[in-house]
Amino acid sequence: ILNVEQSPQSLHVQEGDSTNFTCSFPSSNFYALHWYRWETAKSPEALFVMTLNGDEKKKGRISATLNTKEGYSYLYIKGSQPEDSATYLCARRGGSQGNLIFGKGTKLSVKP
Amino acid sequence: DGGITQSPKYLFRKEGQNVTLSCEQNLNHDAMYWYRQDPGQGLRLIYYSQIVNDFQKGDIAEGYSVSREKKESFPLTVTSAQKNPTAFYLCASSNLSGRRNTEAFFGQGTRLTVV
Image (cartoon, rainbow over all chains, first blue to last red):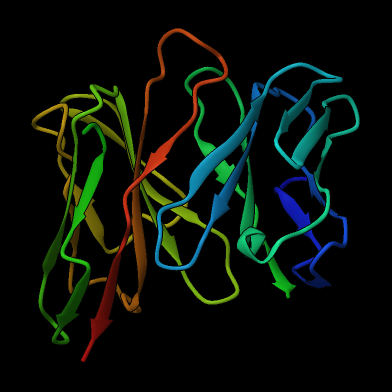
């Protein structure tokens, strides 16, 4: 995998559903993996930055896991709420001075 | 409050004109970045700077220029050489030194339309 790939591209769920999406990235020269939430008309905001293989992070109903050896990360949302509707961006940093390379994002819509 | 500010929020440009997008941060961050977003695309890196008076081309630098005369400022000029400048532009900053898990902070973006 040369680029950062996110799937699915979009997701529509009902309020209360749990959901997850995937970020795949090159495993070589890995430094850090970022997840951002981007709500309409706002700036992207960091959810998690993960650096170690096997890392698991949690913030409220949202959690993420990281597998640097196989090059993927999962983002989970438990009991989705309408306010979770946003685009979720994944980005990989390669090296301490490396840039953030972003995926195309997963657009989540949660219907009440 | 600390943060990163982009201006203007909306910008209209006539074909053949250069325009400059402003990005200012008061977070004392070393690194600053410019990204472009088009419909159906992810954020693509235009230019980045890790230190004052130095900057590097990103993946899509053609038709753009930047300067980094001050740590807090990283303006982006969209030149007439940019063939398809209509897009949403995001500026970001981060602190490269120290912690490995440092995050990036983003401005609210500038939507540029060529008329």
